[in-house]
Length: 336
Ligand code: ISE
Image 1 (tube, rainbow, N blue to C red):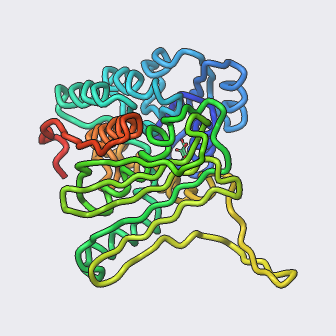
Image 2 (image 1 turned 60 degrees about the vertical axis):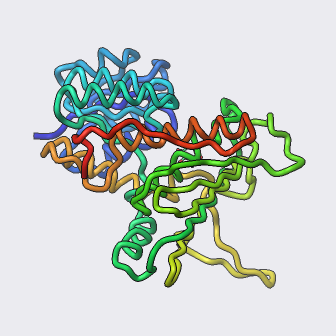
């Protein structure tokens, strides 16, 4: 039987997931597209052949013809809607971040723990990206030796108009906070945040440079530049005591002309991480079918750990000092 999926939020990511469900997920069907804007919901529903469109997310989650939920609405709705899905005992693929508030993440953890199972898979899709997977494998098979540093660059063409100054840390950087934890198998213990001199720090998407420390003594640096202008550019290098490995940018072609060679950049993250999104959504479908949580996917504990780093990062930027990070005790439900 086909798994009937409801998508909440028909913006950039909701529409992209709708496309993946409609075109790439054998065994799943797009049942409902829900958005605060009825026109947007209808447009995406029609484009990808959903059975229905709606403007009420909680009612959509509770519908008896919906088996699983994909949340891609604005960041501050992720935790409340995940809670509504847990209450309805329906599996959820929720876009990152789970919340920008760690206490809200704890409430979702509590809801899962009280039911004795995981319902929410978090959309940290980089865990499914072949390049990051290779990076992790090179560390795990011993060929790099002990990991000591991880360098990360994360550049967008232009910050969206609704971005606040801190969203570089609370919306963009969570990808690196999470993927560094995933690759290194370590937790972040402290964060320092810097901004280059001469930038207008109040400007939407002003660049930030972060240095994180892990409980294995590693250093992780992250540049977020949401107004890089030239293209969507994510880079990373993991440095071990015996070698290093960096992400290759997948480019289909390299063009020559006028004494130059050049490759194209994507204008946003969807083409760069297309394969990761596909693998992630397939893993979610398997989770819905079998109840087995995907081995590499992020869960709400990972979402909580990331929210703690983002909170500490925002504080470090505000107060101009290094901030340490302390976690609650991890419930055994999240042991891997
Ligand atoms: C955006 O919300 C995403 O999740 C993208 O993957 C990321 O690259 C971008 O910086 C975020 O703002």
